[in-house]
Length: 88
Image 1: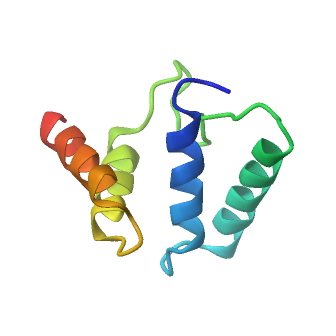
Image 2: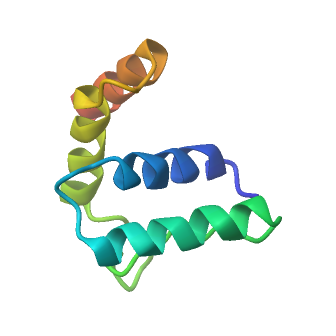
């Protein structure tokens, strides 16, 4: 697992609970979570990542904002997301 694999899995779990995401996106998240539970490698890249491997900052910001608005997210995760947003 990579250093941020917990964050990746957390993002996919949040995606499953987000009523604004497509079923295709949720299916992808289910696949990633299921693969991780079986001990598979977690791929933190996405189709929206640039060819150089950089993450799309708008997608990152959107994920952080979703974390802040998710009632199931713990306060320490919300605080971390807030700090990351402020540093962007």
